[in-house]
Image 1: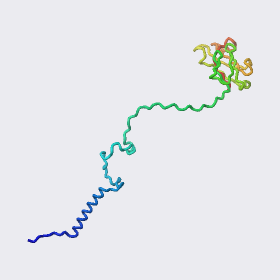
Image 2 (image 1 turned 60 degrees about the horizontal axis):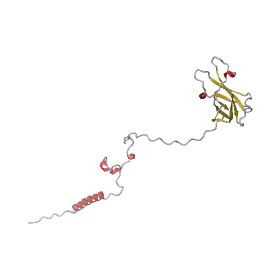
Image 3 (image 1 turned 90 degrees about the horizontal axis):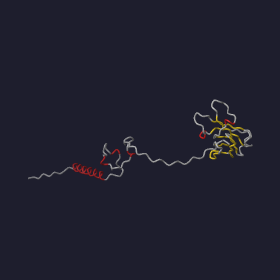
Image 4 (image 1 turned 180 degrees about the vertical axis):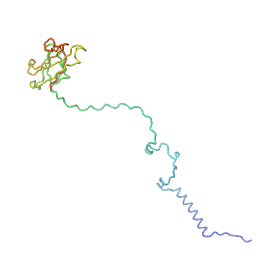
Length: 203
């Protein structure tokens, strides 16, 4: 009996070798990818799933604006520290001023360039200005100090005015305080004088 022996052709050998080389090269490429060789183009849509992302590895900047929900409002913070005091403002323009109580006492904390006050009689006060403030050629403004006014609602009101009669010395002004009598316009005369606190200002 004659034995049949199959001998592959040269083309078949080349084809088989090419197949093995192609398969082996693909496996090699899959197992030995160069660093940084896989990018966006190499990834399929929806290829990266949650199981492939390390927990708590993503940051807020990795998400599109508006994708992360806003958290609940936190508790109010502690009040901040007081700021530093501002610089002092410019000095006022009044050359002299004073707050004088009804008994003639000078309030030093609310006075400037006033040397002294003398209570010479009922409703009559001599205000001596500092030597740096000349009385001659100057004016003064006076107003009752209403917080110290001892009148009540519905009783006679109070007003004050300044006189330059020379009775208070060469550098002083006289302040008269009056209580207006209801139903009259007369304020001159000692019967209308009353002790009242007042402000006096020399501009």
